[in-house]
Image 1 (cartoon, rainbow, N blue to C red):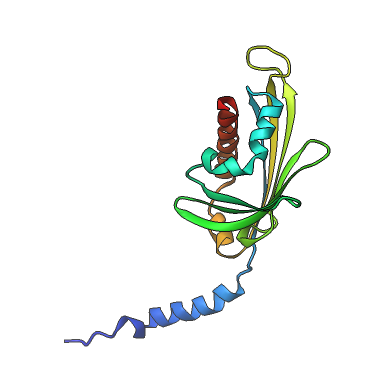
Image 2 (tube, rainbow, N blue to C red; image 1 turned 120 degrees about the vertical axis):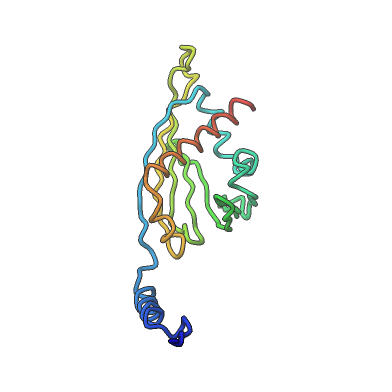
Length: 181
Protein backbone atom coordinates (compact mmCIF):
# COMPACT_ATOMS: atom_id res chain seq x y z
CA UNK A 1 0.00 0.00 0.00
CA UNK A 2 1.45 3.40 -0.95
CA UNK A 3 2.27 5.77 1.87
CA UNK A 4 0.43 9.13 1.82
CA UNK A 5 2.46 12.29 2.28
CA UNK A 6 1.16 15.09 4.48
CA UNK A 7 -0.49 17.87 2.47
CA UNK A 8 2.10 20.49 3.42
CA UNK A 9 4.83 18.35 1.82
CA UNK A 10 3.10 17.95 -1.49
CA UNK A 11 4.56 19.65 -4.54
CA UNK A 12 1.34 21.57 -5.21
CA UNK A 13 1.31 23.09 -1.75
CA UNK A 14 4.97 24.13 -1.93
CA UNK A 15 4.49 25.62 -5.40
CA UNK A 16 1.38 27.51 -4.25
CA UNK A 17 3.20 28.85 -1.19
CA UNK A 18 6.17 30.06 -3.27
CA UNK A 19 3.84 31.70 -5.80
CA UNK A 20 1.91 33.44 -3.00
CA UNK A 21 5.10 34.73 -1.37
CA UNK A 22 6.39 36.09 -4.68
CA UNK A 23 3.16 37.51 -6.14
CA UNK A 24 1.37 39.10 -3.15
CA UNK A 25 4.17 41.47 -2.06
CA UNK A 26 4.61 42.63 -5.64
CA UNK A 27 0.93 43.61 -5.95
CA UNK A 28 0.38 47.36 -5.79
CA UNK A 29 -1.16 48.69 -2.58
CA UNK A 30 -3.63 50.81 -4.51
CA UNK A 31 -5.32 49.92 -7.70
CA UNK A 32 -8.85 51.15 -7.43
CA UNK A 33 -9.25 54.71 -8.63
CA UNK A 34 -12.70 55.08 -10.14
CA UNK A 35 -15.08 57.93 -10.72
CA UNK A 36 -18.82 57.29 -10.56
CA UNK A 37 -21.28 60.05 -11.52
CA UNK A 38 -24.99 59.96 -10.70
CA UNK A 39 -27.79 62.41 -11.41
CA UNK A 40 -31.25 62.18 -9.85
CA UNK A 41 -34.28 64.40 -9.44
CA UNK A 42 -35.89 64.56 -6.00
CA UNK A 43 -39.28 65.86 -4.96
CA UNK A 44 -37.87 67.82 -2.02
CA UNK A 45 -36.61 71.38 -1.98
CA UNK A 46 -32.90 72.10 -2.23
CA UNK A 47 -32.49 73.58 1.28
CA UNK A 48 -34.16 70.60 2.99
CA UNK A 49 -32.02 68.14 1.07
CA UNK A 50 -28.82 70.08 1.76
CA UNK A 51 -29.66 70.29 5.48
CA UNK A 52 -30.17 66.52 5.57
CA UNK A 53 -26.97 65.70 3.68
CA UNK A 54 -24.83 68.10 5.72
CA UNK A 55 -26.02 66.88 9.15
CA UNK A 56 -23.55 64.00 9.46
CA UNK A 57 -24.64 63.22 13.02
CA UNK A 58 -27.95 61.93 11.60
CA UNK A 59 -26.22 59.41 9.33
CA UNK A 60 -26.73 56.50 11.78
CA UNK A 61 -30.50 57.15 11.59
CA UNK A 62 -30.48 57.62 7.80
CA UNK A 63 -28.24 54.60 7.13
CA UNK A 64 -28.84 52.25 10.08
CA UNK A 65 -27.34 49.24 8.28
CA UNK A 66 -24.22 51.07 7.15
CA UNK A 67 -23.25 53.70 9.73
CA UNK A 68 -22.85 52.68 13.35
CA UNK A 69 -21.61 56.00 14.68
CA UNK A 70 -20.40 59.48 13.75
CA UNK A 71 -18.37 61.61 16.12
CA UNK A 72 -17.41 65.22 15.35
CA UNK A 73 -13.72 65.59 16.23
CA UNK A 74 -13.21 69.23 15.22
CA UNK A 75 -16.00 71.74 14.55
CA UNK A 76 -13.60 74.23 12.99
CA UNK A 77 -12.35 71.88 10.25
CA UNK A 78 -15.50 69.68 10.19
CA UNK A 79 -13.42 66.58 10.88
CA UNK A 80 -15.51 63.55 11.81
CA UNK A 81 -14.76 59.98 12.82
CA UNK A 82 -17.22 57.52 11.32
CA UNK A 83 -17.71 53.81 11.91
CA UNK A 84 -19.22 52.61 8.66
CA UNK A 85 -19.39 49.52 6.52
CA UNK A 86 -21.41 47.11 4.48
CA UNK A 87 -22.53 43.51 4.91
CA UNK A 88 -21.33 43.37 8.51
CA UNK A 89 -17.79 44.56 7.75
CA UNK A 90 -17.26 47.87 9.56
CA UNK A 91 -14.23 50.13 9.83
CA UNK A 92 -13.34 53.48 11.36
CA UNK A 93 -12.45 56.30 9.05
CA UNK A 94 -12.05 60.05 9.32
CA UNK A 95 -13.45 62.55 6.87
CA UNK A 96 -13.77 66.29 6.39
CA UNK A 97 -17.05 67.66 5.12
CA UNK A 98 -17.72 71.16 3.88
CA UNK A 99 -20.07 73.30 1.87
CA UNK A 100 -18.15 75.29 -0.70
CA UNK A 101 -19.02 78.90 -1.64
CA UNK A 102 -20.42 77.73 -5.01
CA UNK A 103 -23.03 75.63 -3.14
CA UNK A 104 -21.49 72.22 -3.63
CA UNK A 105 -21.11 69.88 -0.68
CA UNK A 106 -17.99 67.73 -0.39
CA UNK A 107 -16.82 64.90 1.82
CA UNK A 108 -13.15 63.94 1.68
CA UNK A 109 -11.87 60.83 3.44
CA UNK A 110 -8.57 61.57 5.19
CA UNK A 111 -7.68 58.21 6.76
CA UNK A 112 -7.87 54.47 6.21
CA UNK A 113 -8.17 52.39 3.06
CA UNK A 114 -10.47 55.01 1.48
CA UNK A 115 -8.05 57.91 2.06
CA UNK A 116 -8.27 60.39 -0.80
CA UNK A 117 -11.82 59.43 -1.75
CA UNK A 118 -13.98 62.48 -2.42
CA UNK A 119 -17.72 62.72 -2.90
CA UNK A 120 -19.03 65.95 -4.34
CA UNK A 121 -22.74 66.76 -4.38
CA UNK A 122 -24.18 69.66 -6.34
CA UNK A 123 -27.82 70.53 -5.78
CA UNK A 124 -29.92 72.71 -8.09
CA UNK A 125 -33.52 73.83 -7.76
CA UNK A 126 -36.05 72.48 -10.20
CA UNK A 127 -39.80 71.99 -10.49
CA UNK A 128 -41.45 69.80 -7.87
CA UNK A 129 -43.33 66.73 -9.00
CA UNK A 130 -46.59 68.64 -8.44
CA UNK A 131 -45.46 71.39 -10.83
CA UNK A 132 -44.48 73.93 -8.17
CA UNK A 133 -41.33 75.88 -9.10
CA UNK A 134 -38.32 75.42 -6.83
CA UNK A 135 -39.88 72.55 -4.87
CA UNK A 136 -37.73 69.87 -6.47
CA UNK A 137 -33.98 69.33 -6.61
CA UNK A 138 -31.59 67.98 -9.21
CA UNK A 139 -28.74 66.21 -7.41
CA UNK A 140 -25.46 65.61 -9.24
CA UNK A 141 -23.14 63.36 -7.27
CA UNK A 142 -19.59 62.51 -8.24
CA UNK A 143 -17.70 59.86 -6.30
CA UNK A 144 -13.95 59.82 -6.87
CA UNK A 145 -13.14 56.50 -5.22
CA UNK A 146 -9.57 55.84 -4.16
CA UNK A 147 -8.73 52.71 -2.22
CA UNK A 148 -5.68 50.96 -0.92
CA UNK A 149 -4.81 47.82 0.96
CA UNK A 150 -7.23 44.92 1.27
CA UNK A 151 -10.22 47.12 0.46
CA UNK A 152 -8.69 47.87 -2.93
CA UNK A 153 -8.56 44.19 -3.73
CA UNK A 154 -12.13 43.64 -2.52
CA UNK A 155 -13.57 46.56 -4.51
CA UNK A 156 -11.85 45.40 -7.69
CA UNK A 157 -14.61 42.76 -7.88
CA UNK A 158 -17.43 45.31 -7.49
CA UNK A 159 -18.74 46.55 -10.85
CA UNK A 160 -19.38 50.23 -11.48
CA UNK A 161 -23.10 49.45 -11.83
CA UNK A 162 -23.18 48.31 -8.18
CA UNK A 163 -21.44 51.50 -7.03
CA UNK A 164 -23.87 53.53 -9.14
CA UNK A 165 -26.79 51.70 -7.50
CA UNK A 166 -25.33 52.34 -4.04
CA UNK A 167 -25.08 56.08 -4.76
CA UNK A 168 -28.64 56.17 -6.11
CA UNK A 169 -29.84 54.28 -3.02
CA UNK A 170 -27.95 56.67 -0.74
CA UNK A 171 -29.47 59.79 -2.25
CA UNK A 172 -32.91 58.14 -2.04
CA UNK A 173 -32.41 57.61 1.69
CA UNK A 174 -31.42 61.27 2.10
CA UNK A 175 -34.55 62.33 0.19
CA UNK A 176 -36.78 60.04 2.28
CA UNK A 177 -35.30 61.46 5.49
CA UNK A 178 -35.68 65.07 4.25
CA UNK A 179 -39.34 64.43 3.36
CA UNK A 180 -40.07 63.03 6.84
CA UNK A 181 -38.38 65.84 8.76
